[in-house]
Image 1 (tube, rainbow, N blue to C red):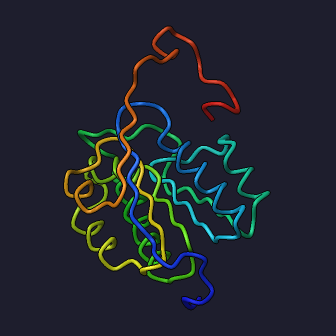
Image 2: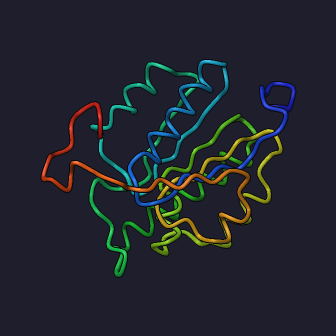
Image 3: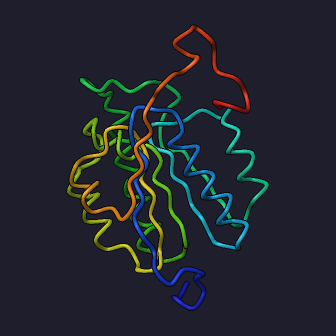
Length: 181
């Protein structure tokens, strides 16, 4: 796509981080709003591979405006000793992210859990910084996940930190379909 096909004249970098619930949810809310205005959106979910997430079905209903793609397994990743499969999937996912961002085909790209992927050493901080530096001027880039690196926070135009005050998981309550998944 060329610049005249885009709705945004200036894309920014947003970061949603912190230990509280709501980072992915906030980014998906932004996607819903953007799709309503006819923007073209691609979400890459790092370190996620479950097919039960409700946003996957919603994306199918919002096509061709919204695409969500998972680039991880449906299992927890070890921070101290990540499985080589997780490293390879994150590497391939980041290569895909680079292709999507640099293509100029999207108004909004969300790299969901990319902050965690960097924090876990699955994706290089320097490569993420380079991608941010080379994104098209009209592309909005959203980076979610706990543990956003200080360098990413410094580069970003908007940073929101979700802080847990109280969570019903701590009282032993299970996740609910349609709310947490």
